[in-house]
Length: 287
Ligand code: CAA
Image 1: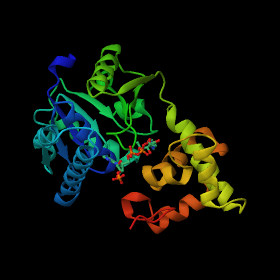
Image 2: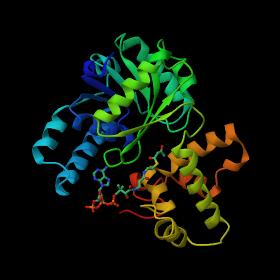
Image 3: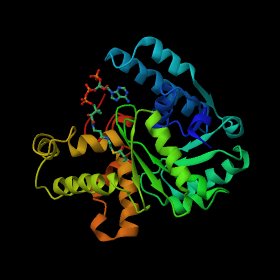
């Protein structure tokens, strides 16, 4: 498959990242099939795209006609087979659990067109292991967007052990066509590049607060005003989803060892369901 052959992108999972990626693909001119497991999830995702496009118009980042055209390119589905009928590229953005992802791929291979290329937006899991569940491990790689996808320029393109050079080049081209800057990750180690650096930062910030050394606000001030990051560590955790960071850490802990042990403060937030902006409350309140 060549980049010029890509017309339809199917995005599996309409959550925070899924609908954000669907929006980016639609803004780039692709027909987008957005699929989730029930009407409510798909509708929430569609509403999220509409909200985001509205914000982009409000901030003069795009015109109203461009926003309307992008929204028109998005079709929503609950039926997996229908969502995959025209797929040239399938972007999987389902929850960050190996068992969930492998279950999805087992179904996807039944319905996806033979020539379609598969990519996963996993933030840390093994690309090789996921690719081996499919019938096309050489046409499978990681395509990792950042939150919020429509505002973040970077995309990690991660090679699995079986990924072909053509697939990596196609997906790098796809990212560029979406106005993103692809960075190639040659080997799929947990957390790739960005999360290997960013998630331990969030974890360390949580340990500082957990041990009573400083408040959340004090830690966030240092990250913003000394380190020059656009958000404090706790603001970022709320933006990304505390559960997302926590699951990445759990996996890094399991594979890379004790240095990545998740702080209990993160576990508590996950148990309470206070996951950040998406639930209205995390380390800060948003209601
Ligand atoms: N679409 C459109 N608009 C959005 C949006 C979205 N998805 N999300 C937020 N906005 C809006 C906000 O509502 C806000 O509007 P109001 O002022 O009306 O409330 C506006 O954008 C803020 O944008 P600005 O340009 O004014 O503000 P900013 O310069 O602070 O930029 C930002 C916002 C781009 C999010 C910036 O804060 C930033 O870069 N933050 C860091 C984000 C980051 O590092 N993400 C990566 C996390 S790691 C990850 O995602 C990977 C993983 O696997 C865990």
